[in-house]
Structure formats: structure tokens, C-alpha cells
Image (tube, rainbow, N blue to C red; front, side):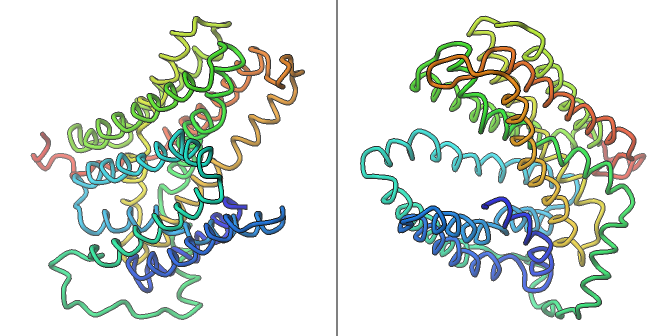
Length: 369
């Protein structure tokens, strides 16, 4: 339900980002996110828990794109990748705290208390955002606020976004790139390490933490590469190819030693950190007046991919009979899942490779470094 609502409101969120700007929109939706977290803590039935998750999905719908929009306004083309990489790397702090610290808190105080604390942290972040963030560059001070558009103008703007030259290849890779990491790290890495290699909860937690740290480092390294080499397409294709190689090894190597499997999982998160470059490429497709709608269209593709790939890989796993007492999957099931993920990425890379590059600086300008 979280993802269903998140997907459903992406285009309206894009319109609102263009209308009222990220500062007011994020502040307003934060109130809804806090309410959803408190509703989760108070849930007494399946229906109320599902409703609470839907409310949280609505409240979180603008966070990612607000950050992308503000980076796009503040930083020029060749600086955008670096700025996005820093924001994305810092965002992984949430993933770290949502792992064993949250589990430890829930085990100590109960999961309801954990969600009350999550509401408090979310509220504090929303207040800090409202008080400390300027959504426009200093040189935009005094500019007239955006004029609300009519419904017809809004729809024409959405149509203009969907017709943007070069959009389809970027959407293709955006749909699968983040889904690869979120599916492996967020869903299957832990069960794989348990079912195939026998790691206990503590050891699995350490590996997942190392994978998250590798992702942070990879994002920080990848972010400036488009400016350094003045190409976004080659950065994405290189990162995607290395990711595909890692998935191929996991899919084709029967029962690798635990150390090798752990190294491959960590390497996967490091080399699959080229999503910042995809976002920077997508930003180059849209004029400033359509930036909110354009970037939320790309985010819609990302959220759809991250929602569908776990379902597909779950169906693949379900085709294999469970072997262990606790319902674990056999080793061939995981290799089949890695293969399906790899094929999905290969299709996305193939479609993306047919599109044009979007170098941060005009070629032949003499500004390349």
C-alpha cells in the first residue's frame, strides 16, 4: 500500500512542485507522514495497518523529488551529479537506521514505540527543512512566484514531458537500475545468506550494513564522473555492465564460498550506484518550468520498477519447493532470481544504449577537464 499510493500521486506531486515549490509541499506532506506513522503505532487491525501505510506513502511522496528539484535549481549541469551524489549518500543513513537499530529498538520497547519515535524524527526533520531550506538560488530572490496553471495547461505540460526527446531510453534504465539494488539489498540478500550460506542474524546484519556502506561510497565516487569525463551515457553503461557482470557471477556460480558470495553482494551495491547519473541525464531533458513534472515522471518509473521486481523474483522463488524447516529456498532458486534480475537489467541497458548522450558541458567547448 505504501508503494501503491506513492506511485498514484507522483504526477500530482510533480504538478505541486512546479506550482508551490518543494519547501511548502514537503512541509505539508510531512504532517501527513507523521500522522501515518502514529496511525501505524495505534493500529489494532489489518485494515487499520494497511490504511496507515497508505497515509505514510502519501506523506513521503515528495521527499525524493524535492531534493532532486532543489539540486537541479541550485547546481549547474556539470555540478549536478556531484550534488545529487552527496544527497543520495546522506539518504542512506535512513537505511542504516532502519536495519538493526530499528529492530533492536522494537525488540526492547516494542514496535509501536518504535513507530512513535519514527513520527517524532520525521516531524523534527520536517521542521528543520521548513526553517533551514531555501528552495531557490540567491540570485532568484525577488522573482515573482510561479503562477498557478489551469487544468488544461497542467495536462499540456504533462503531455510535453511525455513527448520529450530521449525520454524513453532514460525511463527504460531508470525502471530497472534502482530496482536491482533495492531488490537484492532490501529483500533477498539476507535470506540468501541464511538459506545458502547459513549465516545467523548478527552476521547477516553486518553484511547488509557493509552493502549499504559500499553503496554510499559508490554513489560518492560515481557522482562526479559525468563531469570528469563529460559523458553521462558512458558512466551509466559502464556501471550497468559491471553490475550485470556481478549478477551473472551470482547466477552462474553454483554455491560459491561464503566469502566470495559476500564480496559479490558488496561489490554489487558499489558498482550499481550510477542512479545519480541517470537522474542527472533525465534532468537535462526538461525545461525549468516542467522540472517537477518531468522528474516525478522519471521517479514514477523508478518506483514502479522497485515495486514490480520483488514481485517477479518472488514468483521465481515460489517455483522452487522450499527445503528447510523454516521455509528457506534452495540454492538454485536464488541463482534463478539473480538471473532474472540480470536479464531485466540487460534489457534496460540495451534500450538505454540506443538513446543520445547528455554531456554536462557542450562538446568542443574546451572546458573538459
